[in-house]
Image (cartoon, rainbow, N blue to C red; front, side):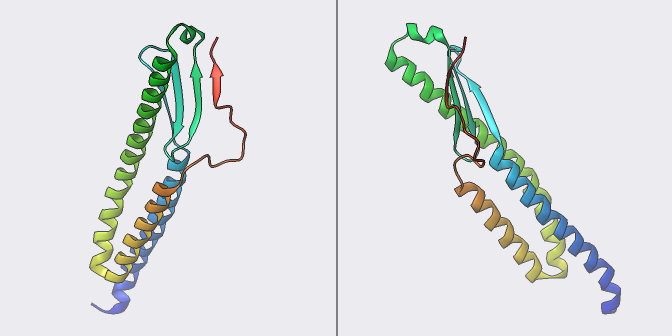
Length: 150
């Protein structure tokens, strides 16, 4: 086999690599914006959070006025923690699906070019770490963090 015979194969792997990198960048952007809504079992509180760690809103029903302030605080805290856990779980599942596809590509690439495969691993790790470290809203729009439901 000559180097010319490998060129179409290498170009196909490079195109796949480029596509995977684009998809990963897009996915990580989507994960930044991913939101989860959780309503307390009592239905008194609903919390919306992002996978990046921002609380978007907390809605409290008027009937919550009848319960003790400490208990309401507990409900808000529990619901917020559950919302963050839900958002993280959804984000991790989506990232895991992408990583499985990326791992297949890396294995194929490693057979042809070990350095390129290592670069893909490094890119994936760097982009993933940036998403995990980010927090707060990703836009400048004002958010109304508290609301009372009618």
